[in-house]
Image (cartoon, rainbow, N blue to C red; front, top):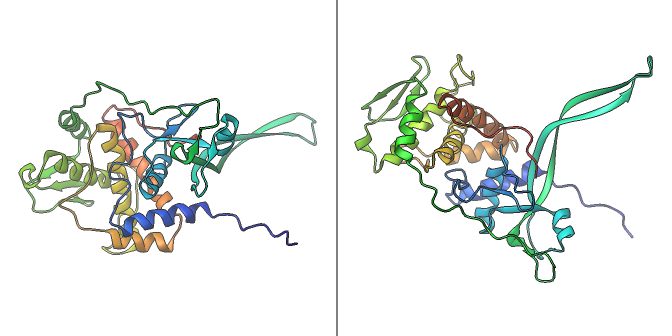
Length: 304
């Protein structure tokens, strides 16, 4: 009888493959990955709202597997509630990152010394749609959708943009960020099909603007089609999605070239590229939101 255990799943590769599957179908999971009104992706028992790259991971699996619920739960937590995982259900692997500690005895003095270090690990969760509570005493929680919450996306976005104090020129035939002049250029509002599309484009370019050496100092030297160029475009896409979610607008771009092929190429060659881009995008969005006096989700301490 063989005692060989199955090889552990490479979580970075697993998530990246799911992203690639969506991109190949023409779907960008970060356009509007979660909803402010319904509370966002969260743990079904604690109510903890996921942050960092985890909402995007939840959105990816929800799109890929057709989940309707925005709530997830750890496998052990589900077992404690008496909820059974339906056969064939797929795990959603969430990434926890934070600070851990270890207490050791100093061999010379005999004193106990506590050392702190950065730690990260993958946590196995399942969407509530994957669980059967028919035989359990405790039933699955219902989706709670906030009522009466109104947004004024246009007014809010105008204030958001003004607060950046960026040099913005309108009236061009194209949208771009000019690093040497530290200037954002976009077409007039009338060139877009809606105000929301105009703001989505502007936030995308402002996300590039955060990469200037005087701000977050990202590498923006890549030529069109290069891996570094594709990564920077992905950073701007994700940053705009983070900001759009906070402001209540969809950040899909209409007057913008398609970079799907370049993203796919980069993701296929580097299984951690998405996570690198998401980390940089979170910093870019946090800077923009901070400039506007809005609270941003913490990129650390992501618990399932």
